[in-house]
Length: 325
Image (tube, rainbow, N blue to C red):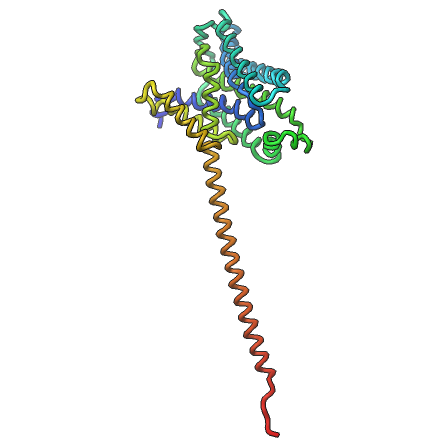
């Protein structure tokens, strides 16, 4: 086990940071907000922590906390700017935001390292997999709470029918703004933790490729639950190791997988599992109902037979016996 851990530690770290990246976009999809701002916040988290550590001598936790707060504030301001946009218009606006972050990283001079990027992001407290696992555990727990109970029902109402949700007294605008703030927090956590463990960041590590990666994970795994995002993150973090023999054809394999998932699995892997479970439950309930009906019918027949026997006995006992005149 230890040999597997140390030989694949980079992939293990990438699995958790990619999970946070995908969740930063999936949380907005769940609230009906078609936004890719999480990829921008991931880049801001990576570069922000690197800048604070290298240029301002911040520690690991202080730098991470600072950039999370900054990205949450930027997310709120972004929600105010794009609050009147929906659908593809909102998606294009957030893609433009991602491109702006990439351009700033390319042209930031000594602050961002330009096209070369920033290297040697080392802190006295070394961030390791247990720290990353603890952060992801807290995030997943918050996701579970948001998917269940009254909160989960309100989020579903906001996503499925905003007008009806508003008529029911749900503040749809507040949920939209909250989705951008949460996206900023999750994206900054993913990017900040990534740079603290990998110690290097370059412009080609952020931007549009992150959108493609996160969207692929969400489509294949499923967009309605954190479990689908976790499954997708596991698949697309470890799949390159499996496809090493394919070489340059990896992109084609990825494309085929996404196309098959989009056509035949619109709900992702978790959607298929959920449908199968519901069908099995419905079939079990139907079988139980039929068995109950058969038992009731049998009981009714037995009751009718007993009633007929009792009536016959009563009739025979009350029949007068014949006598001589």
